[in-house]
Image (cartoon, rainbow, N blue to C red; front, side, top):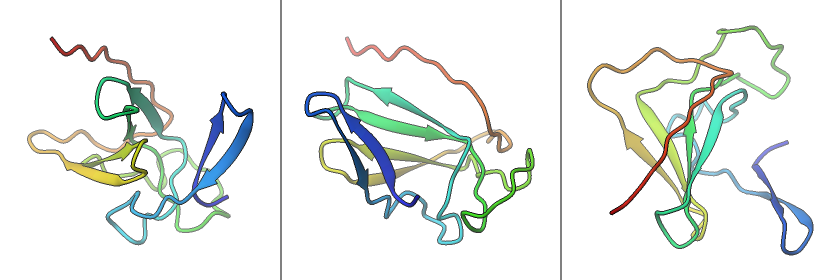
Length: 110
């Protein structure tokens, strides 16, 4: 399925939204086995930050661990309210790509 799938708890329905702009690299148009974390205290409805995953060449990809790892040099960020995608360019010691990961953080603004 293309796009991003979301569930609206208040209205009790599913939606399939465009993911145009998710990847700055055209050949990385599909991503699986990554992680999305919600950061609630930025923007009107929060942001989703996407980390890692695999970028197969098509949706018929046969899963092989580490076969097509997403680059960690750019982090896709989705503004929930506007529906816009942004890309945070990472610098410094960029870790190698990874999939099926778990991240966690506590974002606090004082």
